[in-house]
Image: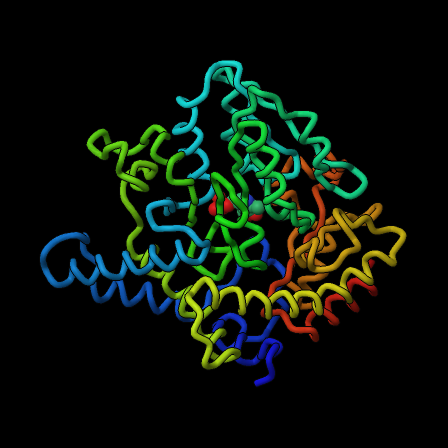
Length: 413
Ligand SMILES: Cc1ncc(COP(=O)(O)O)c(C=O)c1O
């Protein structure tokens, strides 16, 4: 194997039962990635071998405890956190809702929270509702030319009353990657916390909450080749300070359980070890003999993803940007370093649902709408047309697929 191998697509695709059928090109990855066999196997193993209440002194329960502990350890290591800093919950939307109630008692009337109109509603609605309790909510608005959030616009909103800045790491509409470390630096300088939404970043890049120096970080595992479940990192001291939302007998020092409302979906949590199995299979295949820890191994694998995604982006962006009747939302230059391979566009005088239906007839699975990032579609003036078309790729898409998508769009638009 050379020092920097490229992704072995046959090996990769062999892990995904849905790709084995090879009967359509899956371009709806931003809505949720496909699941490798290892995740389903881990869930089946839990349900058939130890689906009992954990933490009790009998064999099946001890096995359940061991598997849940291992899953939580791996998911925490995946984002470079410790298990006690990671809340495992049903969805990111749910996690944020609970957290907004847990942080409100730490704020005073008149304190300020900053949200954006680029973000998915999951990192918007619950924070905006704090306005009903006396919090001032300010909106960091994207620039209509390219959907960018400018740091100078954030600076103009920050004051000594700002308690929290909520912003996405990567947009699920434009694919733009924001400089979270720099936003965190500015928020902290103003005395505020930052809540970064990494849901759309996780499929494409390794998450390192410590390097980003965030207070809160959100990710949904069904976008990272896993089950419908979510992780929420909360910095240890902030988690201890936050007001518990669980049963009264779950103490304020019981982290992270204090930020769960009730118990876990055990079999779902156990299945997340299958995400680690998948990444490790890719790692061992491409980097035999390497002895890094899991987070380090992820770094190597995500490096392969980035190179593959760069190859996928060029043909599609090339076609879309060459068409005078097409408006691509977000950045069109700068490559994979500044944007994920999520391409969203509007075509003059055309119904996005009709375009997606035509793509479906060509064997291309894409979607149309606002993708729950309602505010950006409205800000860019596409809500009345039924939203926009989104084509979103990840590392398991092939160059041949990207070429076919590009040729089809060229013909169709
Ligand atoms: C960027 C982003 N944030 C948050 C969410 C919501 O995640 P969940 O479905 O886990 O609530 C999504 C889902 O599409 C998303 O794309």
